[in-house]
Length: 280
Image (cartoon, rainbow, N blue to C red; front, side, top):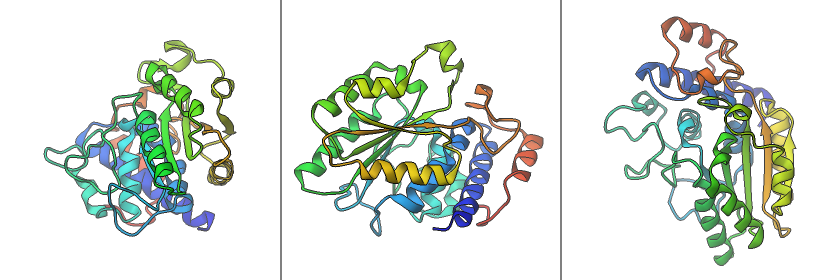
């Protein structure tokens, strides 16, 4: 897809994020905005997808969102990619909605393969799926996304060790490195040091996207990661992003991790992200 079309897609996704959380005065806009380019490229440019949706996912790439609180961007991209009606975005976080604050599976929302948001568990689930693909001789890839603050959870490192030890080389795990979490900067809460070197030390093939809010860099990074699969090592992308990217008063601040904009703030934010595909 042309960059201009991807830019238009991303602009609409940002509008969807903002309007979802504003409508119910709850949700997580900061990380969602920061990962808009990643989701746009993954679903519109990189992933091998089939028509329709089934939980087996045989013959297609799979994606598992580990940091499930950024569901607004996930739901927007799924809807805009044809998994369910765009109009359903208006039900975000409402009682009995399929679009809960953290993705769930009991209501059967197309595109969602695992309930997530209990941080630290996504890679473990994805490893099971990746190994199942190997057993089924399915050549497609499993993708995951994780928050950098999420890596403070110990289960991640067991999974990271397991993935390399078992040579799960059909897995690409991306870390959203925005240096922010709900209580402040990740360095203030619990410093994690050099994540590139940490993953390398655990036996992964690692690459870095310098600016994860640049569509071209995300395209190049994901395609480079894909070229490195099947070579005996799981692949990790450390993707540097900015929390709240695309909304000037939200950018770079942990204060927008889980706070919805008020009416005036919404109007300012929407003015910076033109409607391109039609609001829900």
